[in-house]
Amino acid sequence: MNENISRLMDGELDDAELDRCLAELKSADAMQAWVSYHVIGDHLRGTGGGARGVPARFAAALAAEPTVLAPHARAHRPAQPATFAWAVAATIAAVTVVGWTAFSMVDVPPNAVAKAREAATVRAAQVKPPAELPADYLMAHQEYSPATAIHGGGTYLRAVATAGAEPRP
Image (cartoon, rainbow, N blue to C red; front, side, top):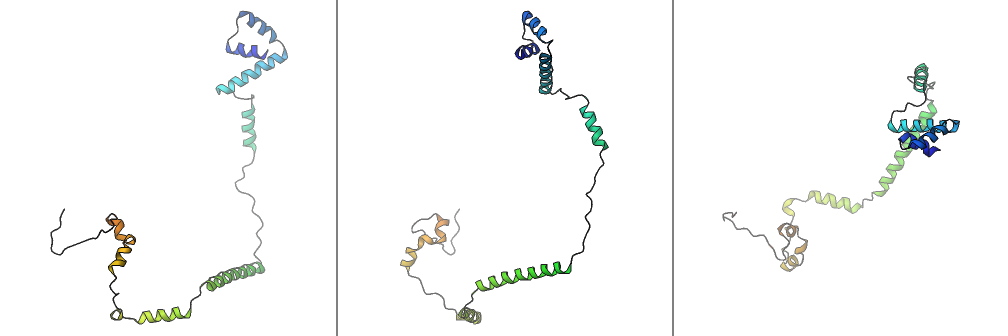
């Protein structure tokens, strides 16, 4: 029966089936299916309005409700002195623990302080230039030179400049 009602709504029944389907629609169950299919079709097409009068009743009930702009204020109790004292004590304890931990991690040996004072008194004239490095050492460690990455990384690549020469393009 439901299939015939669906086909009737889609206009797919011939004359003989149409007469039989219309005769079946006289029953209450068939009429309920007819109404249900029409409501479903209306909602699928976006033209269904739901039950009659529901939007108007809902709008009236919503308009009748009081508007609450803010919740009721709670009774404010003044802070008790003990609460403030506990907060201060907790803050001091936290700062003490963090400070003590940081201080215990920093272990400055006494000879480091003496070397720092000695380095502060050294003048530039007292510093000796480093001894010439042997060419073998330079050749062995050339791959670690920052200039190799800049100049292309040749094994024995060296930058050469002459004084007084005209620059070439």
